[in-house]
Image (cartoon, rainbow, N blue to C red):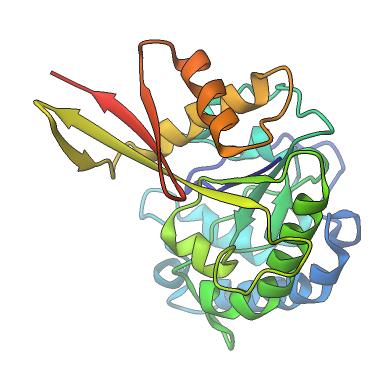
Length: 264
């Protein structure tokens, strides 16, 4: 099973331990050179007068500009200890990610990171950031990540649990689409489910926007805690219903995995 997550705007800076970003040690070596290009572009951006605006650095944290200018020397840590915020607050950083499940996190700086094996710095860059010479981060990454998306579909289709649970937001799905391609013969039977949280009150449903990441974190936690990976969409639903109990409802609507919070 493959679980895809968005990054978080907020991050926890790892403690200094002597370890810094090593691009050659990250998963997906086909991304090493694009990552190197993005790092150089980000450092140029951080050196510009309008760096804070382009990088989305809040006025309360001006030091983030200097840290991005020296990003290659920043301390690194496991992704689940670096990313923070409402989605990652639902995940125990020490959670066991079994070999039969893979959790990948989209990154405007590094393209994609593996939650189990990679070590990353606390960076400030989003899909909508404009980077020197490269333009919008999401647009630039898309052409480098499309081949990886195809490869991930094929690998997951060939595995024992041919299911992708996509909890990314739209901006990050555009960086590495998992649907906009004709599946190869090996990937034809794979199921790609996009997590779609909604709130229901008096029979009326509305799409959850502000707290969507919280629900996606809950989905991820339940799927990681399950004794075995789900191998079909129906099994995904069964696992989530068992994990949520009476707290949340779960439905399949085509390729949408609808998480229903009944309020009021």
